[in-house]
Amino acid sequence: NSGNQEQAIVMASHPEHLRHGRYVVQLSRASLAQLFCLEFFAAQTRDEQLAGIFASHDLPFLGMSRWDRLLSVNGYELRSSQECCNMMKELLSVVLVLQSKNRPSTEPVPQPKMESLPPLDMMLLTITKEILENDTEFMLTIRRRSPKLKLDLPFNKSLSKSKDHGALLAACDMPQLEILAGDKLLSVNGVRSPSEKTLQQFVDTAIVMDLTLRRSPGMGRPPPSKQLGTYLQPYEAQAAAHAGVEEVCAPHVVCCTPVPGLGY
Image 1 (cartoon, one colour):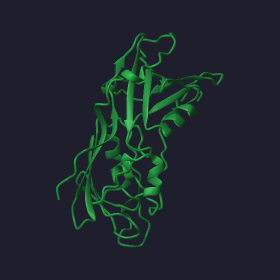
Image 2: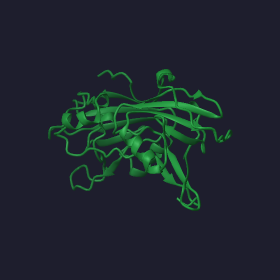
Image 3: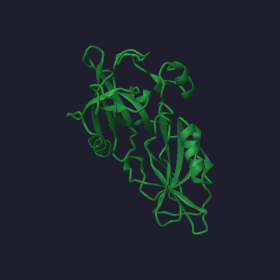
Image 4: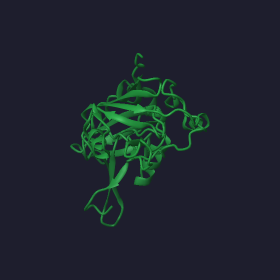
């Protein structure tokens, strides 16, 4: 069967530079179950006050460098790493104002002009699905702009005594990636029956991942030919649309992690 069109899961704007070394970036995701693909870390002073929340990686296509400071999310100045994580979990679209590490400033944080933001014209994460055998096997191509963009792809080794013993099975529903809990991973980038370690190596380093999966029919599980489509719906509608599916990945966000030696 012919493959579907490429679907954008996470989009971003090009950075817009402001005064005093500040810049603004807008990001949008198709589902709350999907990470924004960014990682930040929080640092504290010796008296346990928040020193700042900082970018973890160099992402030049977003104008972002490691140690650039996150000043605000949707115009709100962050007071704690928990606030950062909560906002990232609850929003489908975020407008980030950051401070370049090379141009520190104590000027007031600017309020981004929401009506004149740069357009969301950059695809950070996309998927393409192609049906293979008898509507039970399918290929999923996941493409991201950089391997430094965080990808959450939980698969666990099957412990059952069936023919799937030792195979990697999707740990939970990832409807935004067209994956359901229990889907069996047959191959990744040509490596058949991959181990957890092999899969993790691709997650950590690959820009393009070709996953071949098999979905067992029954138990209210739609066949691969049916587009799950939940990336087009708000999170509240997803639960109702997939009430027959038992487990859904908790939308955790790798937003803020401690820095060794900085007291967090």
